[in-house]
Length: 336
Ligand code: ADP
Ligand code: MG
Image (cartoon, rainbow, N blue to C red; front, top):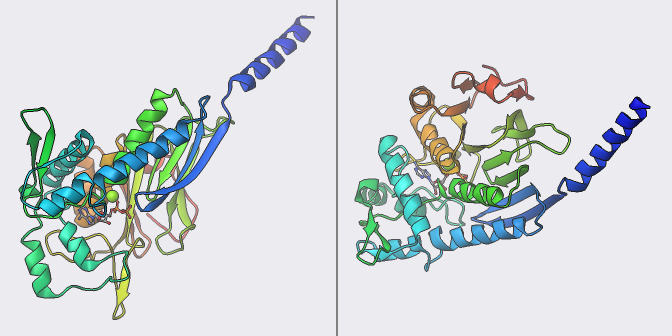
């Protein structure tokens, strides 16, 4: 009798759980120049729509190619103060602070250089030496200034540079989406914005969310390893994105702000995991520029988890990386 009762109780519990467990909602959209995929377990069926609205809002404030955005207006005004949104002010502040912290390996003032190289456009090409020299003179995050005027409104000044938040925007957007999930009481979701991913909780069957780390030598859907993510942000910067080949040489879209040229080191990609989306994005770019030796030392100093992949398929990771994230190598060509 007792056993039957227990059985009934168990069945009731399962029914109660499945009745309460929110259904999966999925969405695929395009914003910030990238494909966005979302899987969210939420009772409220408007969460994905809310997230898409947040993304559009961020793009309209921070895209350098939208003339009316905060960044579009800052770049057009060049050396004059421009009123900007609090969101853009916050991102600018984080970018400038981390430009200093990374000794300029990350520099949000390199919009002029990026435009000259024309990555991702029909006009991608190697700029002339004189053009690069001229642009380098206007590539310095120290020139960017920001503040709050008497009316309490945020303003900023590009200081003669061209601001480009391409190395931080997607990570910041993920921070905002993650906050919206929390606000909606969502405890299980996975969001992907190009090279930046956030996952929280577990799948309905209780298993962890697994993220694939792209194989830089393969095509878009090839992974060299998987890792488990819960409540953290992962960003990868790789040479395979948005680069171009001229005269037999490949030029990647990650620039060394000190030389004005694409970074040319032994790295194929850098993956960074940390509790902040914007920092995972900034650091993945910065560590790529620093290279593995300096980058690993820097990551250890900042308490950031990072995995570097070299062109000859060597993996270099910060201490305890594999254990912390259940790293599972799926392409055995990669070695430690
Ligand atoms: P993706 O945008 O493809 O996800 P990243 O996160 O690595 O890749 O960011 C690359 C973008 O960041 C470039 O498209 C450019 O806008 C900007 N960028 C490139 N090099 C740097 C750099 N050294 N510092 C700051 N931003 C950079
Ligand atoms: Mg980045």
